[in-house]
Image (cartoon, rainbow, N blue to C red; front, side):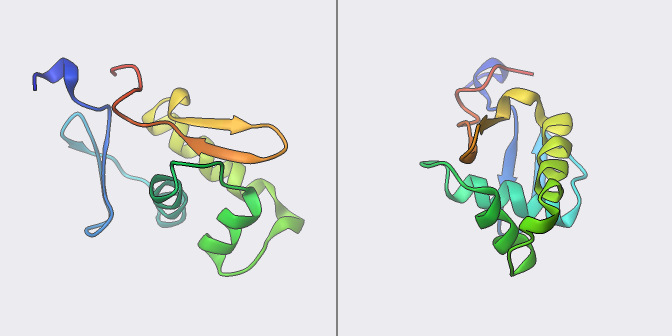
Length: 102
């Protein structure tokens, strides 16, 4: 596999490390939790409520933009194409192997 075939990022869930192009990417703990949950559920759309429950242990729907803030931070670090917003339903994580190369 050459550099052009490498995925744009790698998420090590056990060590809680995110790398892009071999370099560590600093992502806050809760943003990492959002990305990790999307990564482990990439076969489906994940609702904002589910992400809130995963990150905080309860539903924070009354302050629903917190998840959007974390998604925005992830997109800024990894690229907008990594997470797809499914309007009215939630978010889905695109397979990093299918994403455009950085």
